[in-house]
Image (tube, rainbow, N blue to C red; front, side, top):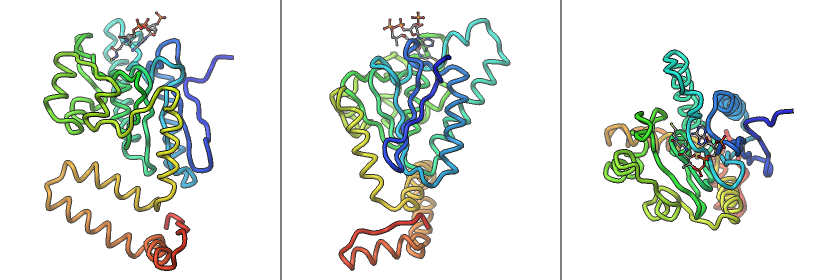
Length: 261
Ligand code: COA
């Protein structure tokens, strides 16, 4: 039987790992792979038992080497547009997931692969990581939000270097410029991502969902609007069961028991 294009594992209660599973094609985002990702994201978004999602690539050569270029051949405009509309929807869904997400990158994260990582809340890189937006070499431009999310994440200069000069960056550089929050040896990458996920389990889920929304949406809003959003969120969280539980637990010198309410 053919291997499924995406694997889902529960690493421990609340922590799910989704693995792009086309290692012989460097996990390129074929239509079946994008469809499988979309189905998983839909399931996860509706499942409060899932607290953190880790994205990873199968094999040791790539996270994801971009869209499946084999599907692009032949100037089939309608199929190309359908793929692009779908991937935009899936990327936005990943970014908007209520649960925190971690991209664990080993090897190539190019084009759509890098853009997927940019939709995650945290990026953890192995030393072998190579990140880039090489679409210009194909005569194309990024289509998964890369021109916008990368510029917002690292500034116009580095984003322009990566797109206009086709510059790939290493995991070490990604860490140095703050794109990745951690740099690990390749054999330690999975453990590094898991440790971050375990840390996330300790915080209140509602607060995490709201904070990740504020970080993304607030970035694109005028500062006073973003500050008002922030304040509304805090007032709401203060009145939530988890807000009161967190305060009580601190004062009682015990661990909080958050319920996501
Ligand atoms: N789409 C389809 N297939 C891809 C792919 C992609 N984006 N990236 C890699 N592959 C396939 C290769 O065609 C090759 O398949 P084959 O063994 O059947 O010939 C296999 O994955 C291994 O890749 P290969 O190119 O042989 O490895 P390499 O070490 O020589 O080069 C890269 C690695 C990542 C530099 C190179 O594969 C590459 O440039 N890929 C495309 C990256 C890209 O442009 N992404 C943006 C797409 S919009």
